[in-house]
Length: 111
Image (cartoon, rainbow, N blue to C red; front, side, top):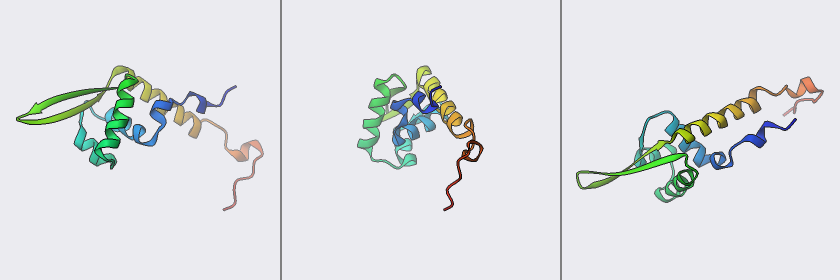
């Protein structure tokens, strides 16, 4: 039997990409600036990670003008929503589904 960590999606696993996916999973669409401010990253770092998620087919990027100002809106694709659900399910399996160390004869760290 293989440890569930092997099922974790490496595209999502990076902390910034995980934060992006979590925020987008909670909404239909999110504006770039709100996402940037919420997860506390720079424009360039967010853009880099969004490109990775977009190339994986997980995020849809829509650019529109509001008046004369460009706005970028982000949303999970159906594939992205499913990938995020699988990822969080795997995390739950890792954190909740494995027996406690004491149950396997391992003494907990006494820090």
